Amino acid sequence: MISRKHRNGSVIVVGGGPAGLTAAIALAESGIETVLAGKRPSPSDNRTTALLGGSVTALATLGVWPLCEHQAAPLKVMRLVDDTGRLWRAPEVKFSAGEIGLGTFGYNIENQHLLAALSQRAGALPALRIVEDEATAIEPGADAVAVTVNSGETFEASLAIGADGRRSLCRKAAGIHLDDRSYKQVALTLCFAHSRPHHDTSTEFHTADGPFTVVPLPGRRSSLVWVLDPYDADDIGVLDDDELSAEIERHSHSILGKITVEPGRGRFPLSIATAHRFAARRIALIGEAAHVIPPIGAQGLNLGLRDAAAIAELAIAAGRDGGDMGGDPVLAAYDKMRRSDVAGRTLTVDLLGRSLLSDFLPLQGARGLGLYLLDRVGPLRRAVMREGVAPSAAQPRLMRGEAL
Ligand SMILES: Cc1cc2nc3c(=O)[nH]c(=O)nc-3n(C[C@H](O)[C@H](O)[C@H](O)COP(=O)(O)OP(=O)(O)OC[C@H]3O[C@@H](n4cnc5c(N)ncnc54)[C@H](O)[C@@H]3O)c2cc1C
Image (cartoon, rainbow, N blue to C red; front, side):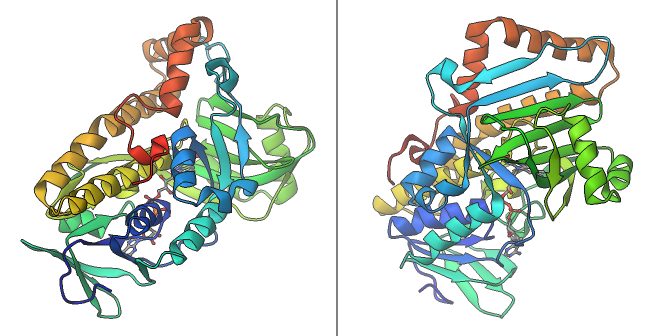
């Protein structure tokens, strides 16, 4: 195992969220000696993740998907409904996977089940050592990067992967700046049972406060991401379960029938952020350490998994050729590979989010026109669907089902 002494061809991943676990599994599966340093993610995360096409393929290729597939619900139809009540309302847009020859766009799964499957797979890989501790110091050097954890133990490796979330210590150690803007909104999250079937359909109601999105789970259950002004979220937060169930039924126009909320409510302040660079000084940033976007269109972790797959692919290739896994060519190639995918999705999500909240009529009009065109122009709609599932920016090999 890597400890204190630098080992060429080794990697340390900081952060055991879904992005970090995926990177560690991808590396260790290929026999790269890997340390994953991070506390177990909170079991109280009651969010779900809509994993789109390539993400599911990657998890299947890594042997993770068979461990949690039965806990996921297919996403066959995605509806966008203008519920702003404004003068310029957009038509409803319906994306059907069948229209582009797919059985599903992807699957929705509770984060706790996804994390359990990732942890189970990680625990079965001999090349992966899991250190359930927090990194307290990260020191990049000329030949190696050293990561010290709370217990005092220090690990040295050729490359550190910063998967340590929004307040990334790795990002600071790499000297990378972040463009960060608060949305002044929060997302309330919970799961609920309902009396009518969801027909594998997610529905995003666009309200003047932000999106109210219901996403299918197995059986007659769904998850909710409700974006609100923080003061409104305070008012909603004090409702008891019966009152909240009735309120959700009202907001969802009873499309799912009678609602019964399940225990556990989450509250997430929303922001948008992109790191100026995705890698420097033997440190590559992935997931929310590199970019944060609001939960519109289910893109955040799908981007994070593509980051994980990309850095693993590049590091493994460099290691195979006898090169330096954390050297500048690998870091530059990683930044280049991820830049346009992240920038494109961040811009789209930001524009959509802002146009919803804005009282500026031309912006509302532009949004309405965009959705009108999506509704009416089949080729445009199909192009948008294909881009959502399989981005035109270079897809990492794992997303194409190729082992590394
Ligand atoms: C309401 C909501 C709904 C969402 N829905 C979707 C969706 O449907 N689809 C989608 O693709 N995305 C979705 N997202 C985005 C998705 O949740 C995030 O992209 C994802 O959780 C980020 O994963 P991560 O591994 O990068 O970071 P995190 O999950 O934040 O993990 C970071 C980990 O690093 C650890 N850590 C931090 N500092 C240190 C340290 N110093 N040492 C060691 N460990 C450390 C933390 O404890 C944590 O476990 C949603 C987000 C929100 C807020």
